[in-house]
Image 1 (spheres, rainbow, N blue to C red):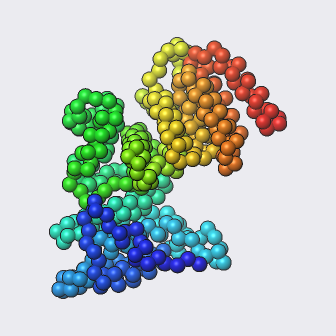
Image 2 (spheres, rainbow, N blue to C red):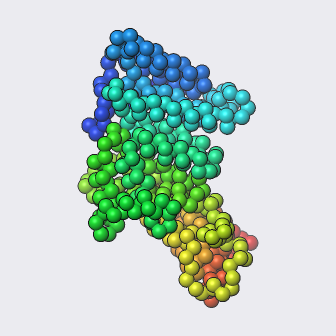
Image 3 (cartoon, rainbow, N blue to C red):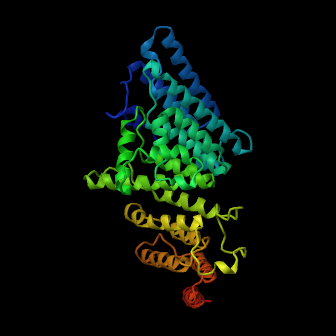
Length: 424
């Protein structure tokens, strides 16, 4: 059995100097304790009771009992109650795999939770006149719930809702900086708006621009201080859409997180606030491999399509997925350094190269496979999947179609290694 942590142990009980906050009154702590007990029931009725206690605190404040009024912790507890709905598991003696007793369709909880956290977060954001401001935890709890629905939705609807929410919570200036990090103006429908931000930067390299972005984010008037969890859930939400623009934004946010973490380490700060997560990287890869398709503009092309004309063999191509594959492959080094990748990480990265139209696909896939083999010798948790060899051979097929004369020979050599490895 697990014990419910005391209020002193909760992550939002120790406010930082970077966030606006008030020390809870003893009366407020009593309400917090009751709300936490209801939130931990992980049921719809628990959510409703938690919100009833929040409304009671508001009523008492209007009646003159200011010490009993709601604070950011009370709102965060209601957001936590919505978040817990998607994570409820019955005790082992009652069976596993069963969730909220709200009908047979678990998908009913997605709109209930996402609509609820969005409503509560917007209400919290409007309490500035009462001296109550959302903090990083408020935003992260909201994004956690929205990310769960984004994975099931698979469209841009949740991304658009998140953008509207961030615009209101962070403010226009901070929102535009966050959503334009590293984005190429030439390949975006919002080129004119993004160009306004670009013109504010002095001509310089990527590191200088990154530093300017960081300073601008700090200087913007917002009570919310973004952390690694914020970036993680934004990457998950944007990548789950399968949309070109949002996938690119997710990739750039992940790169920004890695740079922030490296800066912390360079200053001697061992904090894991912005430590890149293999789960974040895997979500990006998973979304990219699922989102490759043949559009009217041929921006994405699968390895098994025969629509590419023969006269493109050996010529330079400009497929967007090839550029993305190269950019994502560069992130493998920091992910290995800061967060040990899994076997699925390497497998999905090789699969991504099999979707490109690059003559470098075979070489890139073999390099990744070789790194995976080395890591598998050092870490028993990393398994060499048979599919990794299969996808690597597909990469050599891609290379052959785009002008690599030795592609067949290299693929046959890989087949012999695969046969020796698996005994067939």
